Length: 277
Image 1 (cartoon, helix red, strand yellow):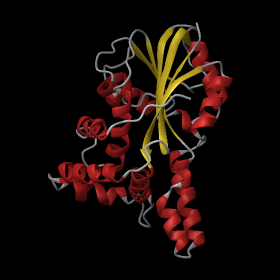
Image 2 (cartoon, rainbow, N blue to C red):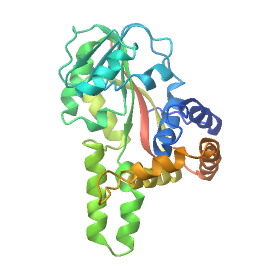
Image 3 (cartoon, rainbow, N blue to C red):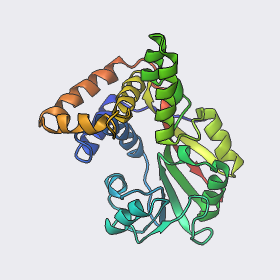
Image 4 (cartoon, helix red, strand yellow):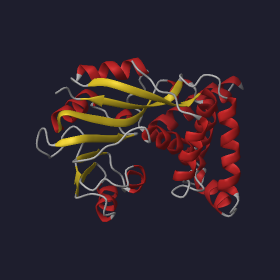
């Protein structure tokens, strides 16, 4: 399977691009920076399906010139925000394996960080195959098995001898993300191919050092508070009160990139797969 490795400067430019969307949510700006850098290597145009579209802000940032886009999201409130964004011609409230659109009607499907959450992955991929025109592509990001294996906070708590607490932390974290498909890169390739799609390339995102820090930040952010809510409810206003945080975190991010030694093994990947003509 052909892969492409990002450069440090590309990832930092990704951070600069996404930071205005998430200036005081470091785990989100960290992850999205890598995705943004990877997506800059590709172009999608024509009739596009955004699978798991959300509110549309990130789609518009990545593909600013796309003007013929249909969104799909299962959450009615999120779908309403997507419809209000002006990014989409229409947004369907529907599961990803039941897209109410004609067969062979889309030039591209975009699936940003959504496929790993799908309970019916093979059926979803078959639906993507159905929706694509011959020669059309699926472009999207996924998490890999490393997302679970490198989960730093539960591993540290287990090392301290608190096995029950570690198990609880890991379960709550995975339940929050509804992580149904933490597959290896090779397994992702096999699932795409099983649905009739051909893998053209993948870009690893968040290798080990960056993965560890991202997973630590994200785990801490979503730890449940005894009084209700999550730790992010406390962390966010603390960071938001400091105007220097986005710039300061960029310096930390740059240092983490300098520490990486293996950019191939990562907890995420951006794939480009094609429906044969």
